[in-house]
Length: 410
Ligand SMILES: Cc1ncc(COP(=O)(O)O)c(C=O)c1O
Image (cartoon, rainbow, N blue to C red):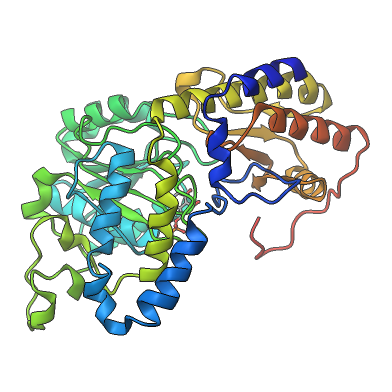
């Protein structure tokens, strides 16, 4: 295993990209699928934004330094990573707010259809917000249908479905679904699709325009490395812009915000999905973080990510399976996102013990350990070291089996 890791790392053309991050010495960071690490470009950009733009330019910086346009400018930068032509993506607010906007707009595109389909395994906020949107529309119901069952469900009920809301990567298991096939079957039923790309954007090539996706959202703090609570983003296909009816009609989405018009007239284009005053400092941090991707070929990034996750699955099978750990992430590359999940009844204690030994991972209840790889900086050797440290912890029973206290970030 160590020879294979060394060879793969030596041949890795993307290895120099790790220098674009300020990763602490001695830490193996496998949690970039929760919070991306700090890109070197962020600190100077933020220092400039604070001291010069805000400190000296004061309110004039809204015009002078492009603060006002930041949500659209940074939206376009994200658009380049997800296969969206300019003018269809807006950055700002949280993923949850963007989901509410996207799901509200999606159901409004099909006003005569009462069903909103979501994944029973979807991230909780996606499920909660689907229910919230349904509550706003008399007679709308949420149906939880696993992506593998969508075809069958739509064959029976498709004419009543307004929208299907899925994530291509299962946040627990790392399973990757076929975005193209799910989008197509949704469209065949005459419904619109809303993708949550939190675990996909920046981790793999995406093709929102080419797939005719209707709406999509994603966060800025995982594979985009925009920092804690980084602004999220929303994509709305250009063909929907003229009729896009967003539920949160704040003044920033008005056609002429500074006219202070008592009545709402939506802005042309995706700008109508803007809501309130944008979080400028966070947007500028995200913008600097995105420069990491400037000359990166996302196909190459994906190939390395697959090599890393396959290697880690092999390590897990050889070292950890005999110790009671069960890999749950699919073996086939086409069905694997950019993290690997391992099942063990004491996942929490194991994650803590790994952290004490310099390996940062996270866990999802009740029993999954998640190892996030990011091909921008993760190496095969680091993954082998993580697997070896976990092996030692398990062999020595060197972990605390007490369940976590409630209310802590885990
Ligand atoms: C798929 C998915 N959607 C949404 C979120 C979180 O939403 P928010 O950024 O509003 O906290 C997460 C967080 O991990 C997620 O994995």
